[in-house]
Length: 241
Image 1 (spheres, rainbow, N blue to C red):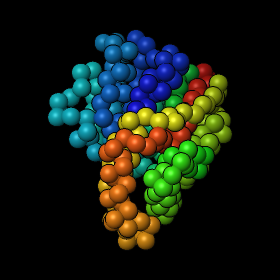
Image 2 (cartoon, rainbow, N blue to C red; image 1 turned 90 degrees about the vertical axis):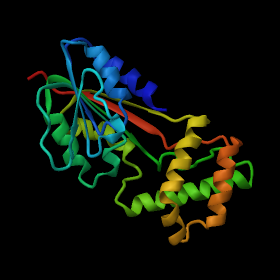
Image 3 (cartoon, rainbow, N blue to C red; image 1 turned 135 degrees about the vertical axis):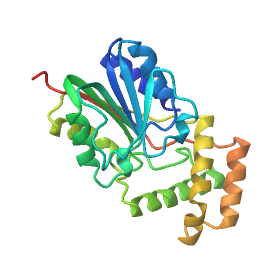
Image 4 (cartoon, rainbow, N blue to C red; image 1 turned 135 degrees about the horizontal axis):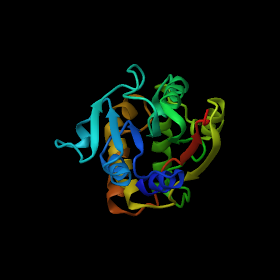
């Protein structure tokens, strides 16, 4: 869902032939594969994650896949032209230290692009709460935010990214935000999320099993104009010297 946003920003910083790129917390292969196509045979892409199974059983052409914990393991190289990380740092207690390590892995003039969520900036699942189904969606989304906060997630992290990049000494810092007012893929993401934390929602008294069953049925019906937390994209360039 967010790939077109990411590709637009990576295009803007100039990813092209010969670049050395690091995709942090790669998840699925699409972003790393896009990078590999852009950098061509003279460039290189390394994609890292603590769980690389989502990258597929076969290596993506032009991409080196490494199991890697960005909170504890050293960078898989140095002098990268681009380091990109999406929807990862918000979940990490030491996110500022990790960001500093990512910036340190850049070559002079290299770009760090961080994209992360800001659930507090727009906390609703349905921005147009027309009736009881939308109200239930927003209540369950509030419960999910409560669970995230209890795990140390900074629900207002996205908006801090420009200041974070400037604090790392990066130049030409910019940022923007994106969220769809409605997108069928939001319902797919929402279902996966609710199913994943269903037991925790119920045990914490944030929703009942019956309410979750009703919500999942409404999601499947396609009747909701469902959105996500805003994705804030920020970028900055390491000084040339």
